[in-house]
Length: 328
Length: 273
Image 1 (cartoon, rainbow over the protein chains, first blue to last red):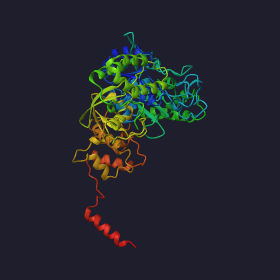
Image 2 (image 1 turned 90 degrees about the horizontal axis):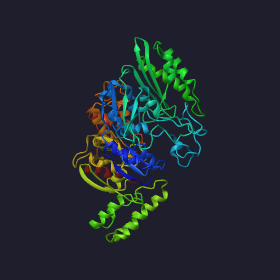
Image 3 (image 1 turned 180 degrees about the vertical axis):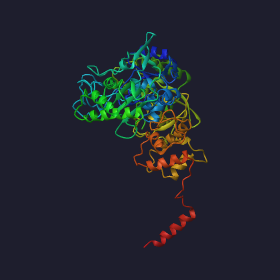
Image 4 (image 1 turned 135 degrees about the horizontal axis):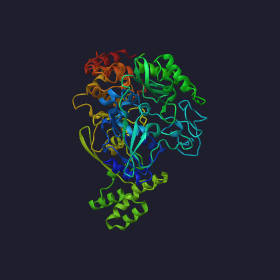
């Protein structure tokens, strides 16, 4: 690990001031991703500003919805009564992620800011445009079984590994950000993470020094019919090959509204608008779910080793919707 | 092994209070190395400190800087003071900010019960309990636990009595090589508290109704962060379930008494050709 100055911040404002005044400074939340990457010299920082004591941890009612502190731990958030009862989709997604130990360490802001990454990003002996811009993408023509089928570029085919962010994408979260100017910037989750394009080194819309303060969720509408399905190589403690956050608002058996987002398929949480478009106003039947899945996966562009994700994606969408509907 | 680049201030000849104050102030100000050395050399009280620095910190800084790219204001041998409790005992450390809790416990406090497995948060061997929550000590900076209470495997038992989870692991034969066991134990002990707090897991059927009694599947899911390369999983699960459900296992083996051992030795001796 390369050396850094260590600071303990006690307020969000103090933290923003410190990081924004050093161009290579970084925030330290739970450290589960950043320290791991720093150990391998994939990431480095001149200064680490430790947010452990910054009190942005509250989970409270907010405008009929909820405000979730960016520095609340993943485990505390997933098990918070307001989240479990009003946004069970979010609890389920968060509990599908990592391990109990990591959920006890990781913060909500840090979860959003974990790097979009793949094995080539970790291995400093191999090319990676995200780690070292201009060196090429090892994965595009290399081992790409885990990689993207939507929205990738020639530069990068990595996927964002967060489960929480997939649920937040389905639930139309808004990210409240403290800026170095002392203002608060609100970024819809759909605009928070980016597709790689020609700048895979950049994962999200944050500018240097900006700090996530909280995550806002709109009033709950899907608490009775939602499901987070995570398909992975082993039963637990593994990244998703495909995950699906499905939420239905039903009027009898008619779909009044639907939200669907996917993980493990793109550089960012993938909101499946085609499924939603295909299902609104329709009956909640397996046949209709399958038609929606078909519509979404038509645009998939698999690589040499991840063609299975297209069929798996269709089946996962249908399964998640059936579970949300209570059919299975 | 301790990283040779990490200076161990505790191992040095103690500095005078003045030297210490000067050293601390200058190291923490993050001055460029040249300016810093100039100041140290120019300060009459700092001659002795300068010698110490050439031996350890300066070497550390130079090596570190040689590896560093584009981190001009990075600390050069600066240390962080950490005050925390480990197994109920108050501890004070001066550490390089890069030192993780795992290495601080093992290298600085000689608490080698906590094991280094992958060192990347993938195996759970380094699991300890911080303020009642199980965490990975390999991905926690020692500096981050300032003011917190750490429990390691050494802190689970009392002088006379093993923790019920430790007893259960013995009764159910919940290990083979034992390397992952300290992490398994800390994780399992914290799991009991999580169950008492009625927390959900991914396999909980309804997030609105947390389970009060954990099924075997619940325990499997909740222990998935602790890998056992010997695959003693069925026994680990049985051990945890027995403590959680307050079920005493039928012990199928026991330590042999001295008399029994003597008897066996006698028998073996008589069998010798």
